[in-house]
Image (cartoon, rainbow, N blue to C red; front, side, top):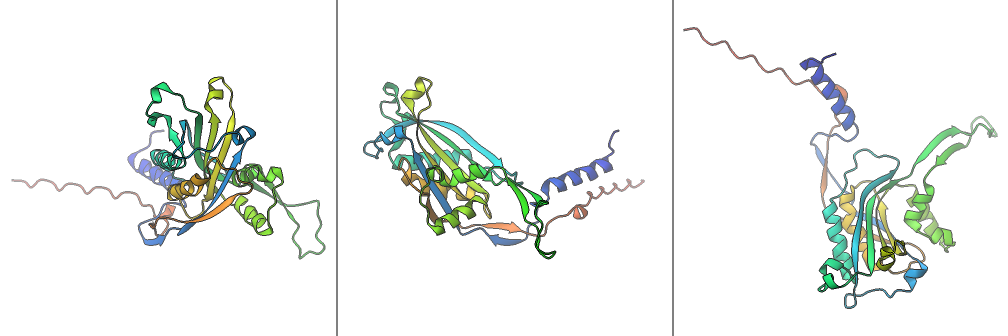
Length: 286
Protein backbone atom coordinates (compact mmCIF):
# COMPACT_ATOMS: atom_id res chain seq x y z
CA UNK A 1 0.00 0.00 0.00
CA UNK A 2 1.43 3.38 -0.99
CA UNK A 3 1.91 5.99 1.73
CA UNK A 4 0.54 9.46 1.18
CA UNK A 5 2.60 12.49 2.24
CA UNK A 6 0.72 12.86 5.55
CA UNK A 7 1.09 9.19 6.57
CA UNK A 8 4.76 9.24 5.52
CA UNK A 9 5.46 12.29 7.72
CA UNK A 10 3.75 10.61 10.69
CA UNK A 11 5.67 7.34 10.19
CA UNK A 12 8.97 9.21 9.82
CA UNK A 13 8.31 11.05 13.08
CA UNK A 14 7.56 7.80 14.93
CA UNK A 15 10.70 6.08 13.61
CA UNK A 16 12.82 9.09 14.53
CA UNK A 17 11.35 9.12 18.05
CA UNK A 18 12.00 5.42 18.61
CA UNK A 19 15.60 5.69 17.44
CA UNK A 20 16.18 8.74 19.61
CA UNK A 21 14.40 7.50 22.75
CA UNK A 22 16.49 8.03 25.83
CA UNK A 23 19.18 10.00 24.02
CA UNK A 24 17.44 12.80 22.14
CA UNK A 25 17.31 16.10 24.01
CA UNK A 26 16.44 19.62 23.11
CA UNK A 27 19.08 22.26 23.70
CA UNK A 28 18.84 23.12 27.39
CA UNK A 29 20.75 23.34 30.65
CA UNK A 30 24.48 22.51 30.30
CA UNK A 31 25.73 19.69 32.56
CA UNK A 32 29.37 19.11 33.43
CA UNK A 33 31.08 15.94 32.26
CA UNK A 34 32.76 13.62 34.73
CA UNK A 35 35.84 15.46 36.02
CA UNK A 36 38.18 12.47 36.27
CA UNK A 37 38.57 8.86 35.26
CA UNK A 38 39.84 5.90 37.25
CA UNK A 39 42.02 4.00 34.79
CA UNK A 40 42.82 0.34 35.35
CA UNK A 41 46.12 -0.87 33.81
CA UNK A 42 47.19 -4.52 33.63
CA UNK A 43 50.21 -5.80 31.68
CA UNK A 44 50.86 -9.53 31.27
CA UNK A 45 54.10 -11.02 29.92
CA UNK A 46 54.58 -14.51 28.50
CA UNK A 47 57.68 -16.66 29.05
CA UNK A 48 58.95 -15.56 25.63
CA UNK A 49 58.29 -11.92 26.51
CA UNK A 50 60.36 -12.16 29.69
CA UNK A 51 63.40 -13.13 27.62
CA UNK A 52 63.40 -9.82 25.73
CA UNK A 53 64.91 -6.63 27.14
CA UNK A 54 62.48 -3.74 27.30
CA UNK A 55 63.39 -1.04 24.74
CA UNK A 56 64.26 2.56 25.56
CA UNK A 57 64.26 5.73 23.44
CA UNK A 58 68.03 5.29 23.03
CA UNK A 59 67.73 1.59 22.17
CA UNK A 60 64.33 1.35 20.49
CA UNK A 61 62.41 -1.66 19.23
CA UNK A 62 60.74 -1.22 15.86
CA UNK A 63 57.26 -2.52 15.08
CA UNK A 64 54.63 -2.79 12.38
CA UNK A 65 51.01 -2.22 13.45
CA UNK A 66 47.97 -4.42 12.97
CA UNK A 67 44.75 -2.54 13.58
CA UNK A 68 41.72 -4.46 14.81
CA UNK A 69 39.88 -1.23 15.61
CA UNK A 70 36.65 -0.58 17.48
CA UNK A 71 34.12 -3.14 18.70
CA UNK A 72 31.38 -3.46 21.32
CA UNK A 73 30.91 -6.52 23.51
CA UNK A 74 28.42 -7.68 26.11
CA UNK A 75 25.11 -5.92 26.73
CA UNK A 76 24.27 -3.52 23.90
CA UNK A 77 24.12 0.12 25.01
CA UNK A 78 22.35 2.60 22.74
CA UNK A 79 23.98 5.90 21.88
CA UNK A 80 27.62 4.80 21.87
CA UNK A 81 29.82 7.09 19.75
CA UNK A 82 33.03 5.42 18.50
CA UNK A 83 36.14 7.54 19.04
CA UNK A 84 38.15 8.89 16.13
CA UNK A 85 40.33 6.11 14.72
CA UNK A 86 43.08 8.46 13.50
CA UNK A 87 43.32 10.14 16.89
CA UNK A 88 43.73 6.87 18.80
CA UNK A 89 46.42 5.61 16.44
CA UNK A 90 48.28 8.93 16.57
CA UNK A 91 48.25 9.10 20.38
CA UNK A 92 49.27 5.44 20.67
CA UNK A 93 52.20 5.93 18.29
CA UNK A 94 53.38 9.02 20.19
CA UNK A 95 53.09 7.33 23.59
CA UNK A 96 54.82 4.18 22.36
CA UNK A 97 57.72 6.18 20.88
CA UNK A 98 58.36 7.79 24.27
CA UNK A 99 58.77 4.30 25.71
CA UNK A 100 61.12 3.12 22.95
CA UNK A 101 58.61 1.44 20.63
CA UNK A 102 58.97 3.08 17.20
CA UNK A 103 57.15 2.51 13.91
CA UNK A 104 59.32 0.63 11.42
CA UNK A 105 58.29 3.16 8.75
CA UNK A 106 60.11 5.88 10.74
CA UNK A 107 63.35 3.92 10.91
CA UNK A 108 66.13 5.59 8.91
CA UNK A 109 67.03 2.32 7.15
CA UNK A 110 63.48 0.92 7.09
CA UNK A 111 63.84 -0.46 3.55
CA UNK A 112 66.94 -2.48 4.51
CA UNK A 113 65.85 -3.85 7.88
CA UNK A 114 62.95 -5.72 9.44
CA UNK A 115 61.07 -4.90 12.66
CA UNK A 116 61.20 -7.08 15.75
CA UNK A 117 57.57 -6.66 16.80
CA UNK A 118 54.01 -6.72 15.54
CA UNK A 119 51.77 -4.54 17.72
CA UNK A 120 48.03 -5.22 17.55
CA UNK A 121 45.69 -2.36 18.52
CA UNK A 122 42.05 -2.83 19.50
CA UNK A 123 39.60 -0.68 21.44
CA UNK A 124 35.92 -0.45 22.31
CA UNK A 125 33.50 -1.21 25.13
CA UNK A 126 32.74 -4.26 27.25
CA UNK A 127 29.53 -4.35 29.28
CA UNK A 128 28.31 -6.98 31.76
CA UNK A 129 25.80 -9.34 30.19
CA UNK A 130 23.40 -10.53 32.87
CA UNK A 131 19.86 -11.95 32.96
CA UNK A 132 17.62 -11.86 36.04
CA UNK A 133 15.57 -15.06 36.11
CA UNK A 134 13.56 -13.94 39.16
CA UNK A 135 13.15 -15.59 42.53
CA UNK A 136 14.56 -19.07 43.08
CA UNK A 137 11.52 -21.41 43.24
CA UNK A 138 13.56 -24.09 45.03
CA UNK A 139 14.17 -21.90 48.08
CA UNK A 140 11.37 -21.20 50.57
CA UNK A 141 11.93 -18.10 52.75
CA UNK A 142 11.66 -18.50 56.53
CA UNK A 143 8.68 -16.14 56.63
CA UNK A 144 6.42 -14.41 54.12
CA UNK A 145 8.13 -11.05 54.61
CA UNK A 146 11.45 -12.36 53.31
CA UNK A 147 12.01 -12.35 49.54
CA UNK A 148 13.40 -15.50 47.97
CA UNK A 149 16.94 -15.16 46.57
CA UNK A 150 17.03 -14.21 42.91
CA UNK A 151 18.69 -16.24 40.18
CA UNK A 152 20.94 -14.07 38.03
CA UNK A 153 22.89 -15.43 35.08
CA UNK A 154 26.22 -13.69 34.37
CA UNK A 155 27.28 -14.67 30.86
CA UNK A 156 30.56 -12.78 30.44
CA UNK A 157 32.03 -12.45 33.91
CA UNK A 158 35.23 -14.18 32.78
CA UNK A 159 35.76 -11.59 30.03
CA UNK A 160 35.14 -8.74 32.49
CA UNK A 161 37.59 -10.21 35.00
CA UNK A 162 40.25 -10.76 32.35
CA UNK A 163 39.95 -7.19 31.07
CA UNK A 164 40.50 -5.78 34.55
CA UNK A 165 42.84 -8.27 36.23
CA UNK A 166 44.48 -10.10 33.31
CA UNK A 167 46.11 -13.31 34.49
CA UNK A 168 46.23 -12.22 38.14
CA UNK A 169 42.98 -14.00 39.02
CA UNK A 170 44.02 -17.26 37.39
CA UNK A 171 47.49 -17.16 38.98
CA UNK A 172 45.93 -16.71 42.43
CA UNK A 173 47.58 -13.33 42.99
CA UNK A 174 47.37 -11.90 46.51
CA UNK A 175 44.77 -9.11 46.62
CA UNK A 176 44.03 -7.04 49.70
CA UNK A 177 40.44 -6.69 50.90
CA UNK A 178 40.14 -3.22 49.37
CA UNK A 179 41.58 -4.46 46.06
CA UNK A 180 39.02 -7.29 45.97
CA UNK A 181 36.23 -4.80 46.63
CA UNK A 182 37.43 -2.52 43.84
CA UNK A 183 37.71 -5.50 41.48
CA UNK A 184 34.16 -6.60 42.36
CA UNK A 185 32.81 -3.11 41.66
CA UNK A 186 34.75 -2.80 38.39
CA UNK A 187 33.44 -6.11 37.05
CA UNK A 188 29.86 -4.92 37.58
CA UNK A 189 30.28 -1.79 35.44
CA UNK A 190 30.47 -1.32 31.68
CA UNK A 191 33.96 -0.26 30.58
CA UNK A 192 35.83 1.36 27.71
CA UNK A 193 39.12 -0.29 26.85
CA UNK A 194 42.26 -0.14 24.74
CA UNK A 195 44.28 -3.35 24.31
CA UNK A 196 47.81 -3.47 22.86
CA UNK A 197 49.32 -6.89 22.14
CA UNK A 198 52.95 -7.44 21.16
CA UNK A 199 53.94 -10.41 18.97
CA UNK A 200 57.31 -11.58 17.70
CA UNK A 201 57.73 -10.44 14.09
CA UNK A 202 60.20 -13.17 13.07
CA UNK A 203 57.84 -15.90 14.28
CA UNK A 204 54.92 -14.29 12.46
CA UNK A 205 56.78 -14.62 9.16
CA UNK A 206 56.78 -18.38 9.78
CA UNK A 207 53.06 -18.37 10.48
CA UNK A 208 53.51 -18.68 14.25
CA UNK A 209 51.76 -16.30 16.67
CA UNK A 210 54.17 -15.78 19.56
CA UNK A 211 52.67 -13.39 22.09
CA UNK A 212 55.24 -11.44 24.11
CA UNK A 213 53.03 -9.15 26.20
CA UNK A 214 49.53 -7.72 26.35
CA UNK A 215 48.44 -4.40 27.86
CA UNK A 216 44.81 -3.98 28.96
CA UNK A 217 43.74 -0.40 29.73
CA UNK A 218 40.17 0.27 30.82
CA UNK A 219 37.90 2.68 32.66
CA UNK A 220 34.24 2.88 33.66
CA UNK A 221 32.06 4.12 30.78
CA UNK A 222 29.32 5.67 32.93
CA UNK A 223 29.05 9.44 32.41
CA UNK A 224 31.44 9.74 29.45
CA UNK A 225 31.88 8.82 25.81
CA UNK A 226 35.01 6.92 24.82
CA UNK A 227 36.44 9.95 23.06
CA UNK A 228 36.58 11.69 26.47
CA UNK A 229 38.86 9.05 28.01
CA UNK A 230 41.18 8.02 25.16
CA UNK A 231 44.06 10.25 26.30
CA UNK A 232 43.62 9.19 29.93
CA UNK A 233 43.77 5.52 28.99
CA UNK A 234 46.88 5.87 26.83
CA UNK A 235 48.89 8.18 29.10
CA UNK A 236 48.14 5.99 32.13
CA UNK A 237 49.10 2.75 30.42
CA UNK A 238 52.02 3.60 28.12
CA UNK A 239 54.74 3.84 30.84
CA UNK A 240 53.97 0.21 31.75
CA UNK A 241 54.05 -1.28 28.22
CA UNK A 242 56.34 -4.31 28.26
CA UNK A 243 56.63 -4.30 32.08
CA UNK A 244 55.19 -7.22 33.99
CA UNK A 245 52.57 -6.42 36.65
CA UNK A 246 51.45 -8.89 39.31
CA UNK A 247 48.23 -7.01 40.05
CA UNK A 248 46.46 -4.15 38.23
CA UNK A 249 47.64 -0.58 38.63
CA UNK A 250 44.94 2.06 39.16
CA UNK A 251 45.42 5.75 38.31
CA UNK A 252 42.99 8.63 38.76
CA UNK A 253 43.35 10.98 35.79
CA UNK A 254 41.62 14.37 35.28
CA UNK A 255 39.60 14.67 32.09
CA UNK A 256 39.41 17.62 29.74
CA UNK A 257 36.76 20.12 30.77
CA UNK A 258 33.60 20.28 28.71
CA UNK A 259 29.85 20.38 28.89
CA UNK A 260 26.99 18.37 27.45
CA UNK A 261 23.69 20.05 26.70
CA UNK A 262 20.85 18.30 28.47
CA UNK A 263 17.28 19.46 28.11
CA UNK A 264 13.75 18.14 28.19
CA UNK A 265 13.41 14.70 26.59
CA UNK A 266 11.22 14.67 23.49
CA UNK A 267 8.45 12.07 23.69
CA UNK A 268 6.32 10.66 20.94
CA UNK A 269 3.47 13.01 21.75
CA UNK A 270 5.72 16.04 21.44
CA UNK A 271 6.76 15.36 17.86
CA UNK A 272 4.35 17.23 15.68
CA UNK A 273 3.88 16.83 11.98
CA UNK A 274 5.36 19.61 9.87
CA UNK A 275 2.92 22.43 9.32
CA UNK A 276 1.54 22.49 5.78
CA UNK A 277 2.96 25.18 3.58
CA UNK A 278 0.59 28.14 3.18
CA UNK A 279 -1.13 28.30 -0.16
CA UNK A 280 0.02 31.05 -2.43
CA UNK A 281 -2.43 33.96 -2.70
CA UNK A 282 -4.25 34.08 -6.05
CA UNK A 283 -2.87 36.62 -8.46
CA UNK A 284 -4.84 39.88 -8.54
CA UNK A 285 -7.03 40.36 -11.56
CA UNK A 286 -6.25 43.29 -13.78
